[in-house]
Amino acid sequence: MMEKMIFGRFIPGNSFVHKMDPRAKILFVFLFIAIVFIANSVVSYAVLLAFTLLVVTLSKIRLYFLITGLKPVIILVVFTFLLHIFFTREGDLLINFWFLEIYEEGLRQGVFISIRFLVLVFITSILTLTTSPISITDGIEVLLGPFKRLKLPVHELALMMSISLRFIPTLMDETGKIMKAQMARGSDIGSGPIKERVKAVVPLLIPLFVSAFKRAEDLATAMEVRGYRGDAGRTRYRQLNWRFVDTLSLALLAGLAALLWYLRI
Image 1 (cartoon, rainbow, N blue to C red):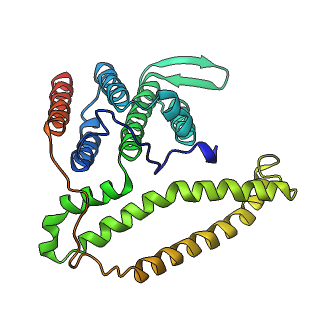
Image 2: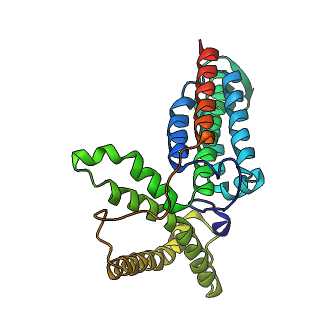
Image 3: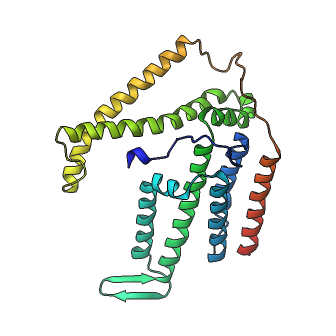
């Protein structure tokens, strides 16, 4: 499962979404997060799902690849759905079988929150899958540019976020290697009681943290040797260009917001 995780990974491509300016994609994601909360009915959540599938199609990222890479998140979504099903006791009683009682409001909230969670994860994953870490850094830095007047270290913050995204797949790969090494030495992580599984994770975390700190130290040394001194006097090889596709994507998002608001009222 660790090898198939897609958090922080970048897949080069030539799709509509790949060609978008990173600033437009970052704005798109943040505005989409706000727009999702407008939906409050079955029809509006169906529109959200359809719009998300449209974005996935335009990115040319296979839906099966997304679902496989987000399997831990999907398990969490299913768990959240079951919590609402079993513990929300409002509305009409739909099912009453032995100890199992499912109410209308519990089913409704479980479905709505699960869909909301899924579309948010899919859209944010599309951002990282179709945008290189350096482009995300440049986009965030430009968008946060006005805060430089408030003496906010915009460049350093953008760089930190970019490095964090870049290290996620690296740490996932490292975790997979350590797990295989532990299993080769006779450690049984995936079976047994929960207490034993928790104990088996401790030998996994220690080398993972040591490796992460070592990588961070090597990166800091490499940046210092290459003369990195923050944003002072730096220029960019890759220039950001806002094009028609970027305006069109935000216009589609505005149309989605208007449609959801219409369905809400």
